[in-house]
Image 1: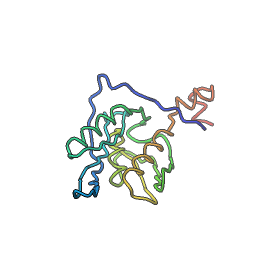
Image 2: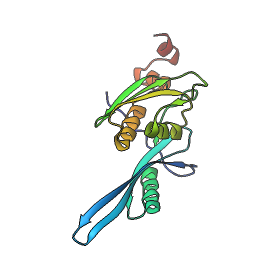
Image 3: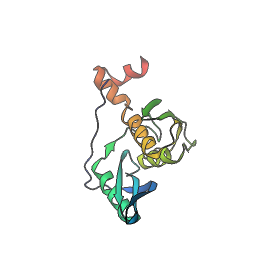
Image 4: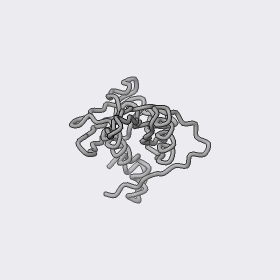
Length: 171
Protein backbone atom coordinates (compact mmCIF):
# COMPACT_ATOMS: atom_id res chain seq x y z
CA UNK A 1 0.00 0.00 0.00
CA UNK A 2 1.35 3.41 -0.88
CA UNK A 3 1.03 6.22 1.62
CA UNK A 4 0.03 9.65 0.39
CA UNK A 5 1.76 12.42 2.28
CA UNK A 6 -0.59 15.21 3.21
CA UNK A 7 1.61 18.34 2.99
CA UNK A 8 0.42 21.57 4.61
CA UNK A 9 1.30 25.23 3.96
CA UNK A 10 2.68 27.24 6.92
CA UNK A 11 0.51 30.30 6.31
CA UNK A 12 -1.84 31.32 9.15
CA UNK A 13 -0.79 28.50 11.49
CA UNK A 14 0.07 29.06 15.13
CA UNK A 15 2.85 26.53 15.58
CA UNK A 16 4.44 25.53 18.88
CA UNK A 17 7.92 24.03 18.85
CA UNK A 18 9.26 21.31 21.14
CA UNK A 19 12.90 20.42 21.51
CA UNK A 20 13.38 16.65 21.34
CA UNK A 21 17.13 16.40 21.79
CA UNK A 22 20.42 18.26 21.50
CA UNK A 23 23.67 16.52 20.60
CA UNK A 24 27.12 18.01 21.09
CA UNK A 25 29.38 16.95 18.25
CA UNK A 26 33.15 17.15 18.65
CA UNK A 27 35.48 17.39 15.68
CA UNK A 28 39.15 16.89 16.46
CA UNK A 29 41.56 18.83 14.28
CA UNK A 30 45.28 19.54 14.59
CA UNK A 31 44.41 22.89 16.23
CA UNK A 32 42.31 21.23 18.92
CA UNK A 33 38.66 20.32 19.34
CA UNK A 34 35.80 22.07 17.55
CA UNK A 35 32.35 21.77 19.14
CA UNK A 36 29.10 22.03 17.23
CA UNK A 37 25.51 21.16 18.10
CA UNK A 38 22.65 19.37 16.38
CA UNK A 39 19.06 19.76 17.54
CA UNK A 40 15.93 17.78 16.67
CA UNK A 41 12.82 19.94 16.89
CA UNK A 42 9.13 19.07 16.44
CA UNK A 43 6.60 21.80 15.59
CA UNK A 44 2.82 21.47 15.55
CA UNK A 45 -0.41 23.36 16.03
CA UNK A 46 -1.84 20.68 18.38
CA UNK A 47 -4.71 20.23 15.95
CA UNK A 48 -3.48 17.55 13.53
CA UNK A 49 -0.60 19.37 11.84
CA UNK A 50 3.00 18.49 12.72
CA UNK A 51 6.52 18.53 11.30
CA UNK A 52 10.06 17.75 12.44
CA UNK A 53 13.44 19.20 11.57
CA UNK A 54 17.14 18.90 12.26
CA UNK A 55 19.33 21.95 12.79
CA UNK A 56 23.11 22.02 13.04
CA UNK A 57 25.21 25.00 14.13
CA UNK A 58 28.11 26.09 16.33
CA UNK A 59 25.70 27.43 18.98
CA UNK A 60 22.73 25.74 20.63
CA UNK A 61 20.23 28.56 19.99
CA UNK A 62 21.16 28.76 16.32
CA UNK A 63 20.84 25.00 15.93
CA UNK A 64 17.36 25.10 17.48
CA UNK A 65 16.30 27.99 15.23
CA UNK A 66 17.52 26.10 12.15
CA UNK A 67 15.65 22.99 13.32
CA UNK A 68 12.42 24.98 13.68
CA UNK A 69 12.80 26.41 10.16
CA UNK A 70 13.45 22.93 8.76
CA UNK A 71 10.41 21.55 10.61
CA UNK A 72 8.14 24.26 9.16
CA UNK A 73 9.11 23.11 5.67
CA UNK A 74 7.97 19.52 6.38
CA UNK A 75 4.48 19.94 7.86
CA UNK A 76 1.94 17.14 7.38
CA UNK A 77 -1.73 16.59 8.34
CA UNK A 78 -2.48 13.68 10.67
CA UNK A 79 -6.02 12.31 11.28
CA UNK A 80 -6.99 12.76 14.95
CA UNK A 81 -10.30 11.23 16.07
CA UNK A 82 -11.73 12.43 19.42
CA UNK A 83 -8.26 13.17 20.80
CA UNK A 84 -6.80 9.79 19.85
CA UNK A 85 -5.72 7.92 16.72
CA UNK A 86 -8.21 6.06 14.49
CA UNK A 87 -6.56 2.62 14.74
CA UNK A 88 -3.48 0.70 15.92
CA UNK A 89 -0.28 1.18 13.97
CA UNK A 90 3.21 -0.34 14.02
CA UNK A 91 6.07 1.31 12.19
CA UNK A 92 9.83 0.94 11.94
CA UNK A 93 12.68 3.25 11.02
CA UNK A 94 16.26 2.07 11.30
CA UNK A 95 16.57 0.15 14.56
CA UNK A 96 13.56 1.84 16.18
CA UNK A 97 10.13 0.22 16.15
CA UNK A 98 7.08 2.05 17.50
CA UNK A 99 3.61 0.76 18.38
CA UNK A 100 0.67 3.18 18.69
CA UNK A 101 -2.71 2.16 20.07
CA UNK A 102 -5.86 4.28 20.51
CA UNK A 103 -6.94 4.94 24.10
CA UNK A 104 -10.20 5.99 25.73
CA UNK A 105 -10.72 9.55 26.93
CA UNK A 106 -8.83 10.51 30.09
CA UNK A 107 -5.97 8.05 29.54
CA UNK A 108 -3.42 10.70 28.57
CA UNK A 109 -0.32 10.29 26.44
CA UNK A 110 1.44 7.14 27.63
CA UNK A 111 4.65 7.47 25.65
CA UNK A 112 8.34 8.09 26.20
CA UNK A 113 10.51 11.12 25.39
CA UNK A 114 10.82 11.53 21.63
CA UNK A 115 7.46 9.90 20.86
CA UNK A 116 5.70 12.05 23.47
CA UNK A 117 6.94 15.28 21.86
CA UNK A 118 5.63 14.23 18.45
CA UNK A 119 2.25 12.97 19.72
CA UNK A 120 1.61 16.06 21.87
CA UNK A 121 2.55 18.37 18.99
CA UNK A 122 -0.01 16.62 16.77
CA UNK A 123 -2.71 17.24 19.38
CA UNK A 124 -3.28 13.66 20.45
CA UNK A 125 -4.41 13.65 24.07
CA UNK A 126 -5.11 9.93 24.64
CA UNK A 127 -2.84 7.23 23.24
CA UNK A 128 -0.84 4.20 24.33
CA UNK A 129 2.60 4.00 22.73
CA UNK A 130 5.57 1.70 23.05
CA UNK A 131 9.00 1.95 21.49
CA UNK A 132 11.10 -1.15 20.94
CA UNK A 133 14.65 -1.54 19.76
CA UNK A 134 16.75 1.58 19.39
CA UNK A 135 16.10 4.55 21.69
CA UNK A 136 17.93 6.92 19.33
CA UNK A 137 15.75 10.08 19.23
CA UNK A 138 16.41 10.64 15.49
CA UNK A 139 15.06 7.20 14.58
CA UNK A 140 12.22 7.33 17.13
CA UNK A 141 10.91 10.63 15.72
CA UNK A 142 11.11 9.29 12.16
CA UNK A 143 9.43 5.99 13.10
CA UNK A 144 6.66 7.86 14.93
CA UNK A 145 6.11 10.06 11.88
CA UNK A 146 6.01 7.00 9.63
CA UNK A 147 3.34 5.45 11.88
CA UNK A 148 1.28 8.66 11.97
CA UNK A 149 1.46 9.05 8.18
CA UNK A 150 0.08 5.53 7.70
CA UNK A 151 -3.04 6.33 9.75
CA UNK A 152 -6.29 6.60 7.79
CA UNK A 153 -9.61 7.90 9.06
CA UNK A 154 -13.01 6.40 8.17
CA UNK A 155 -13.74 9.07 5.55
CA UNK A 156 -10.52 8.29 3.66
CA UNK A 157 -11.21 4.54 3.79
CA UNK A 158 -14.77 5.05 2.52
CA UNK A 159 -13.57 7.26 -0.31
CA UNK A 160 -10.82 4.80 -1.25
CA UNK A 161 -13.25 1.85 -1.34
CA UNK A 162 -16.03 3.88 -3.08
CA UNK A 163 -18.55 2.99 -0.35
CA UNK A 164 -20.52 4.95 2.25
CA UNK A 165 -19.17 5.61 5.74
CA UNK A 166 -21.87 3.36 7.28
CA UNK A 167 -20.56 0.43 5.24
CA UNK A 168 -17.03 1.02 6.57
CA UNK A 169 -18.24 0.74 10.18
CA UNK A 170 -20.67 -2.16 9.57
CA UNK A 171 -18.30 -4.21 7.41
